[in-house]
Image (tube, rainbow, N blue to C red; front, side):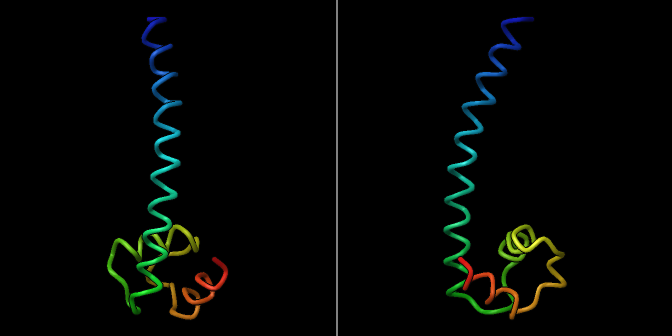
Length: 72
């Protein structure tokens, strides 16, 4: 039991580092896609924007997206 708990802790730390790198890569990739694309975006990009802007994808406007990109 203790070994499983210790292994789980190590795995969580290792996966956490990988996930941070993956999130950074995803942010970079999607920011480029938004800059090149035009409104409305694909569902994957809309989901990412929704997360970044903190509002549902149906409520995101093109003006907000441009302001977000200018801030980046």
